[in-house]
Length: 494
Ligand code: NAD
Image (tube, rainbow, N blue to C red; front, side, top):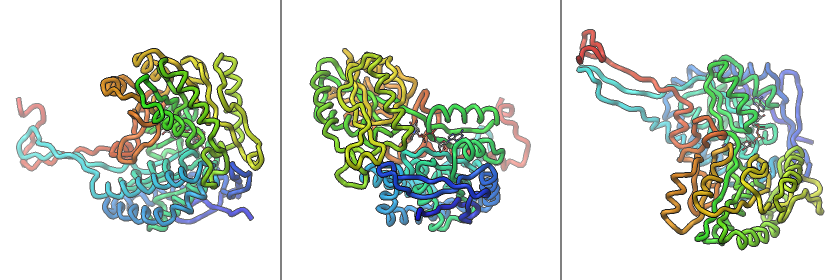
């Protein structure tokens, strides 16, 4: 029988008020993986209420104590890593090695933020007046709503929840309906580590019902969202109307630049990993490869050979290199782009179809696909496809490569392969994305550095690193006048 999971509200695991449920299936096999509450607005309101009730005690809990709970959660994640990784692959499809990486990222973030319990530094600075002390301290924002996608179901929630908690906020977490079990595993871990009731609340369900209610709720002080541009833009407009800060991480259309002087085998490894890892369903996936004319033909030929050899299958099989895509909608969306690319005049050099061979017929599999002869303005080079598809674009110079790299509405990740240090630094300077890699693919973020994108990808916030603390805290500036008389800043010094 399908296992039934519940929401966590105020420390109690509870069904949706009206008893509705939804099922999730394994995208590789179609088998059911769990049944979850299909929550409605009332469940969200209950969760926000619980988070409000817990807020005063949690913000008074010393930050090092909050950090200790996170540290214990990290220790549990380490112990449960293999189980959590297997369950993660089972519900969203990524290959098991990458699922372990996803859980590892949550472990890294949880340890890192546990340490912030003893840092979260502010500043002290001399006052312009005598007998006066000036400092800045971080204060929690209150109740935080975290809304997350399915493609990193452990890592992305941890990027939001851990910094929010260590800085003294309480959380209502709405995970993607396509990866609910991993969300449950993460929240249960925090509960087992001793987080007080109501400090973290979990509400399963649809975006339009649960997510939208969370965004609109007046007691939610901040929304931290990762997902598509369509939904993110909508949340931005709601936030503007409500005067509510929103931190947005959205789509990407990332590129790897391969210069004539590149180490070609190394660049090929980088493109294969960045374009087809997680079946191309990473916000940082290399969905464009910008190749200088001198090596274009050789590179295209070798890339197609490598892509054709990739082994598709169930991600739980250690030999699988490319798993399924997440659901049928995604499969159809990717398939529809094949005709778009051909109609625009690109060459479909390999892949280009769903695949039903043997056991693959039970899941949502799409062949690793390479378009060659793509032009920068084609839709297949501009729009986020979010599947195992990459487009090769030929350029003449570094300047042209940088212009093509920057000529999309997104600005998340870029990479350049070159052996020339001058070119590498010129690229780092000229590329307009939040992440830039030299002689490495477009993926591979580490938790102690800021993560996020420019232009259409973000709205100026960054996740991870100490930058995350800026999202989840307000600066409070404190002046202490111990002169015993009225001192007037800007005026007494005249
Ligand atoms: P999505 O936008 O469909 O959903 C994201 C979350 O928003 C889900 O939990 C969903 O239920 C919820 N949601 C949907 N409608 C809502 C509404 N009206 N109000 C509030 N919440 C709502 O995205 P997805 O398909 O889950 O994820 C894929 C997308 O996420 C891609 O575009 C990818 O690039 C992006 N992504 C970005 C980053 C990044 O850091 N920039 C990281 C991972 C994924």
